[in-house]
Image 1 (tube, rainbow, N blue to C red):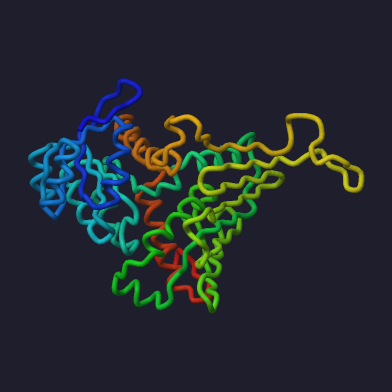
Image 2 (image 1 turned 90 degrees about the vertical axis):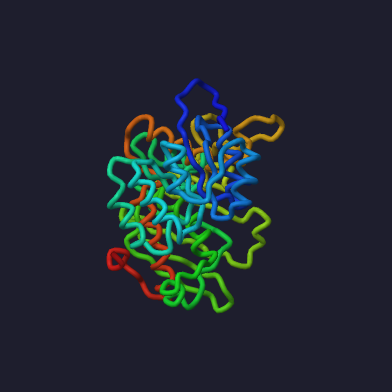
Length: 351
């Protein structure tokens, strides 16, 4: 399958590893908008690999080593799960191939160390989609514009819980929703506010609670673990404050920038005084046109993460966003939250 693109660009030969529901429902449709040439789909389930390959017009394989040898790809896209990602990434890197992998990248931060050792000059990107959303890009731009002030505080609301018995979960490598989806709000917070130095989780007796974050840059943040909220409705929100600026992201697709108004206590009589250089600005997709910026592949960051992966490869530069270092840090935050039990955990102590 040759992906379509809006401009003439060099295509990259890629293999997709993993033909499960997420890959076929989300990743493969996103490739249509990128200059990738999908030459093969590889899955341990031969019937599933063949079915997907027939649909997308490429070869089918059940073994990565044989697929690499037969297809000579420039990159692999991994969607095989956190237990399989590190060894598969190592195998691809040893073959000199660039690697993109879906989140979560691994069960433990230490599992990524062999991948880091083998990366060399190859590009490796982990698909933390919310770090690549247009809304996230806009928030970063707004907070840094005109020599923006240092971030003071951040709040995230996400319908998730940190499970109890975290030490056992880590030791046994149990897949939980905290592993699979907790990285979403954490990745956006870290993308905007930077790395975290310390983390504390306080759980409600009824589920949910708060994850308190101390950022290396000096800001303090809170992830409201809004377990129990109806996740089928719009509950996700991010709120950043930086000395006179407020940026809010609602539902991943609405950015609200509040600049304030000319104001004197006890004297200002209009909440909308004359002028265009103050007040709020809002960006959000419209749905009366069937255009790309309204599609889920773009609003949720899938296109952004794969586009970034492609650009890093063709431009010969290492990945910074969604890098292995970024992924390792997020995985340490995942571990710290499981171990906290109300205690402050310093991320450096986890290695």
